[in-house]
Length: 231
Image (tube, rainbow, N blue to C red; front, side, top):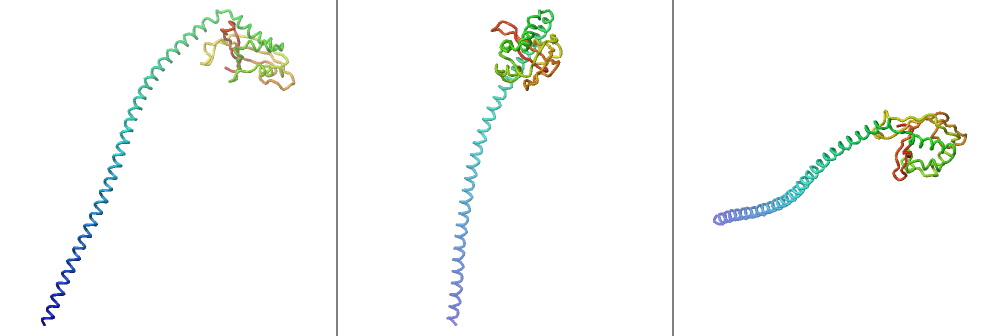
């Protein structure tokens, strides 16, 4: 009986000891797990804090750039306002100049200007292309690039049998804004074409053209600044 009691007491003690050890082991595991989680949280917090610092630095850089751009925009707006004022002054000056020219032209001797057109037509008609070419200001044409002498000659040497002046009149009305203040003559031309394939600038019969006349400072004479089918 004593042995049975001793065995039972020993079993109880062993069970309690094992249970106590398990509790200690479980507690240590939980502590380690908590420490690991806590370390992970700290690492995450540090990483997030570093990212936040980087964002704040980037945000500060952007704020400084915005301030710089706002200053640049203010300067550009001020410059634009100044340019608008200068443009307005220039437009008013051009308007007064154009009005002055429009008022003086009817009282001006137009013959020297008309003679330039007559000489040009006669030169083309008589195949004196050198003379006709020299009458155009810096060899002006309605094309974007100045016409070379070779192109100019080929433009008229074929296809034009004869060209004569029918009418010439100063054009002062209905001028487009980019040609206001210019000296422009409305010219009627009678053209006879050959059967050769040449210039298509003129059609058979009556042709109407607008001759812009300008003063060449180098030559000190009136010249043709452009020839237009339409204004």
